[in-house]
Length: 309
Image (cartoon, rainbow, N blue to C red):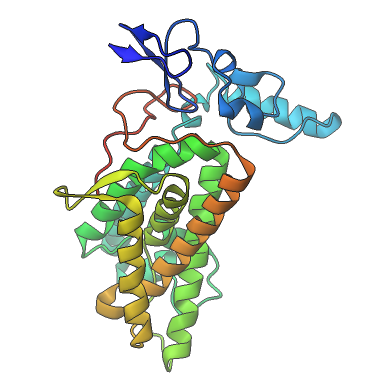
């Protein structure tokens, strides 16, 4: 039996709001019946039926037609309806598909072609496609690289996506990843002479830490299990991660032990800054732990699992 967060009554079959994550009785289950904070942020007159993809104000003309098309594509029954509330899982899928393509590229074209397509290298920053492909690519020889990044995105990504929406989550992921990679590249250039063999950057660590940064600001007391064993608030995990990266950069090892510490710090900084912006501009209600079940705004696979890292 659960307690309704709106009226305090006990409910045998409670409902969980997919926007704010709180528990309600049958009377208060709809967002407008419990004054859901997400209602204040939706500009679509359709209210709870907003696609979650386009939050621009309808100004008529071409913008209105474009918005209507997006709504139809991502709305219930639309060909892209899955992506509504499931962008975190989509990014995970793209990462693993890219990982398979990396191996295929190595087998067909060799390591040289792989680096040209997927690695952001200090000697070749003009290969602008690698600014993005390197975010989704991971070390082919270090399977744990993609595994650990996937864990962070899988457990923390859906909750952040619930707070900010699918489109903004996708932008946060890509922009933070690109900025992190470019920043690490600049640090490498400043550290010494750059040659064609100077190691490059790849991986979604910057984007993953941006997700952690947003969550640290919005829900600093969220309990996580470090190494699946040690319980700690997420702010402590974030602080420890930042301290390690600062230490290596301070000793002139921005890429110490093959880890892009500069990219980690930049990704985390982007997430913390964006989280602070969201906190100032939106009324966010948080919980101190993840709940099983639920779903994103589209009711698909979305919905946070138990927080572990």
